[in-house]
Length: 84
Image 1 (cartoon, rainbow, N blue to C red):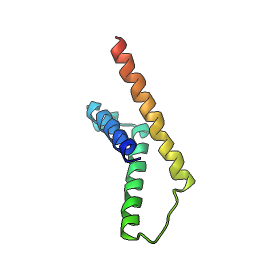
Image 2 (cartoon, rainbow, N blue to C red):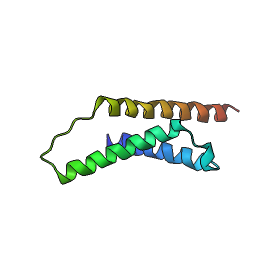
Image 3 (cartoon, helix red, strand yellow):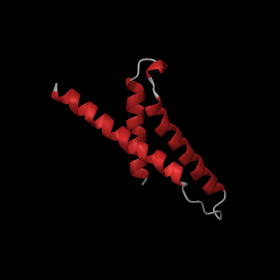
Image 4 (cartoon, helix red, strand yellow):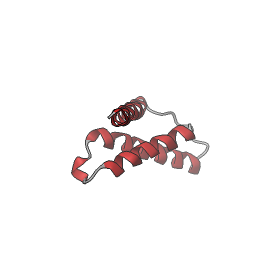
């Protein structure tokens, strides 16, 4: 899970580096960034309160699925560039 999390962070970083100005960033990129921040906050909270067991809410899970769509979009874009 940590490997997947790091890979997703690297993909988001690559997408952010591609942007030339903040106006180019759309909601499609912001959603996975917000989701990652929520996950990181939940992990930090769990580390400070290890007795408290939390489950990922369904809405947060659906947001995490957005990361998969972003990864697929970036993969298609990189494949398109490679085919040129």
